[in-house]
Length: 257
Ligand code: ADP
Ligand code: MG
Ligand code: MG
Image 1 (cartoon, helix red, strand yellow):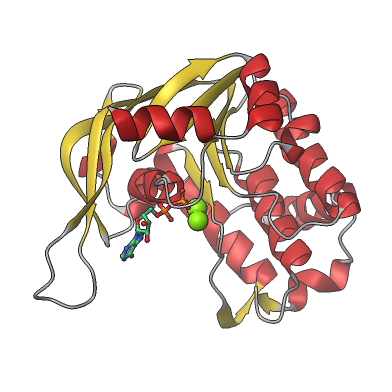
Image 2 (cartoon, rainbow, N blue to C red; image 1 turned 180 degrees about the vertical axis):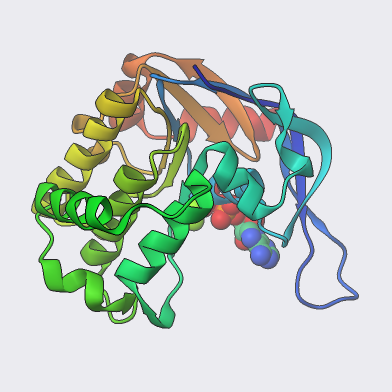
């Protein structure tokens, strides 16, 4: 069992202009995600959802000014980005980076070595990769290409889910995994996430603006995220309400507060 605990998290971003004042983006986030649970964070654009995922992953641009993040009681904020991955955290990003000149297969094996603490035996590894590729309906030639270079939106997402399946993290943070996917790709990607949940009993934090992906990946917990905070938590019925009425009720309440 793993438990990611976020308490009273405040995060600033300092704009590129060094004279600029830091902008306060997260204003006291509380959230707990355990193994076997799927939480959806839903909120309007610009509410700070990606900032939350970057802060958990340790992106240097995002400064935590208050609050804590722990994984099984260990201080995540004291860990480097690599240490967070080794501890079992995984972030699939809204805009994955391109890594020219590094093939997918090398990238994956290096990542698996870092996370597992030893290089996977080559014969087992080849088999593992093959199985994951076929499950995600990815052409085997895919892994010889450079990481994300020239990938379509759907290919990038499949690549992330391929990583998820192979790295087997304790807690996976999936930020807008549904963006830019057609229905077929959405189905395959969702299947990958669902099989990760079942096989690894992984915890999932699914961050999204739209309710569409929740038809394929069913969360037990839904949180409404507005203006840098969780303003309401509930079950799947909360997502249905958002689908029907949008975020207006929550954004106007936050503005009046
Ligand atoms: P969401 O993912 O909910 O759309 P983000 O976390 O991407 O929201 O952004 C929240 C707010 O923080 C936005 O107003 C955005 O412009 C601002 N922001 C995020 N990252 C940066 C950055 N690196 N520099 C300046 N502003 C940023
Ligand atoms: Mg956004
Ligand atoms: Mg975002």
